[in-house]
Length: 211
Image: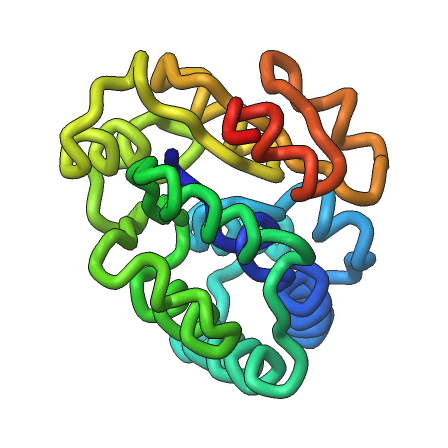
């Protein structure tokens, strides 16, 4: 099993999207939180920067990304919590000896930070993979194929747990069974075509046949 990190293991998306909205507005591009949430959740930072710069018609300052990451990390330390119910899922997977790992578009430093803050890092140790380790991040399948290969599992035996269109696209492109976590029942459920959508982490063990 391959878990996305943001929005699946840690409830970071609301915090990160708020920080990203503030940073984009401060850079001179009017944008709403809902637009950021719709267009950039789960995205690769290089693609997000390219989109912002194209709309601005100029390059962002060299320190824009590091400054955004630093502000977001500070907010994580104050506010971040695990996704409700996910620790129980990880405990059940471990008890059933199902191999699992993390596959996130973010850099390893970010996943290590957020998993460490929430205490979930003890379930993954060195089984954390980043889109920065492969030629193409999500929505390309490279990250998930890389993670499965390192874990010694074929795509046909791998399961992806995602919460974004970008991640769902990657999981399906990797020809893995793909589940879409949509806890708030918003319009994303209709956009996650090809995924098996669920709304509560408590549902996942039964969906996976663990109960």
